[in-house]
Image (tube, rainbow, N blue to C red; front, side, top):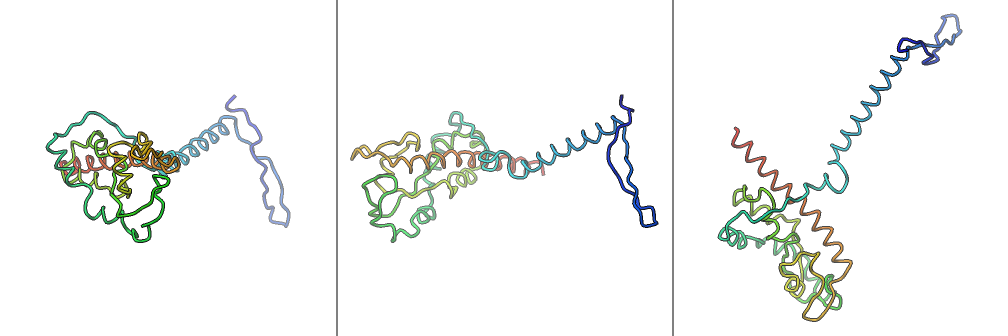
Length: 219
């Protein structure tokens, strides 16, 4: 069966006297199957490289690594030391860029409230969650602070909003109890999405530090 000849293509050949002759090129069944198999494999490889180059499935690989949570593996003493180092003064200033133009504008988190003073730097992914991510305890203190002070993980909240949110995640923060104001649904939805993306980025940052430390040891 593999050696059975079958028509594979129609070719033309110049006769050299101003005429072209057409003829049928034959291949065996085995040759055709082989070529198809190679083409199929190449197409799959191209698709894989494309996905690899773009970080995989959009919304996951191109963002980071799914967070791996466990129990706290650092001492309370170290936690308190790290807590004193985050957010930095630089980050507190960063969330207040252009604050002059924001004073008197509606609070995006609490409908009916207004921005009346400087904003407070809030960890989007809570510190108490970051320090429970796998491998966080394997980092140097300097690296731990770099993760905790990742600029992307901060948002400026009004004093009222920040005190209301406290140590709750955006998934759990639903109401400003003092005035019985529901947290703006659209704002909360956007922040929950951002929170999930940042969990992945922070876990990847932690893992990258660990890999870098291993390479330094192997040198």
